[in-house]
Image 1: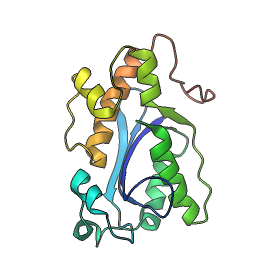
Image 2 (image 1 turned 180 degrees about the vertical axis):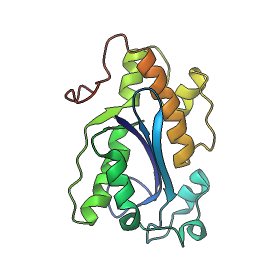
Image 3 (image 1 turned 90 degrees about the vertical axis):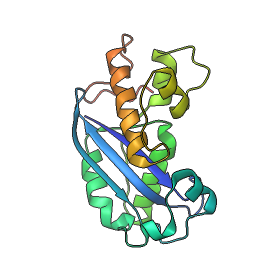
Image 4 (image 1 turned 90 degrees about the horizontal axis):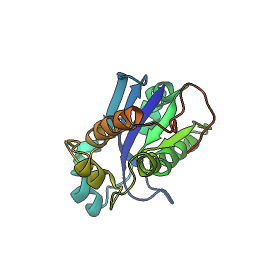
Amino acid sequence: MYCIVDIETTGGVKGPTRIIEVAIYRHDGQQVVDSFQSLVNPETFIPPFISRLTGIEDKMVKDAPTFAEIADPVRSLTQDAWFVAHNVSFDYNFIKKEFLWLDEYYQRDQLCTVRLSRRIFPGFKSYSLGNLCQSLAINVKDRHRAAGDAEATVTLFEMLLRHDHQRLIPKDTEPTLL
């Protein structure tokens, strides 16, 4: 199992920054079998730069659940699955930080679609999600929104699975390779 994850946040991983949106697509290697998405009340203000980038404003998250209120579906959907994201350390470390604030240790094996893309589809000028999707003709709806970026990453991941002749993507419970 794989869980393709994308989040939007109030800033970088370090410091008191928080998640403002999350999308998770649980994938069995053939198709999406479950999903979860939600705006998240960060219990702090969203900087104007982030609002301009994502379109998510304070008023949109005012009545949204806090991370503590969505921790159960995040935990259960990612349980016993590879945590997959484009630049996985960003998304993973944010989720891990949110769980630490709940006094809970969170650990998942990780796969990075940036690193996989560089190995499986070498030669592109840029491996940012937007540029890579453009190069591979992947349609991205709602760029810089968790669900839109996660859906694009699902499509990218499915392409990676189909073209993984080097067997870089672990099946079942192999140790983390990337």
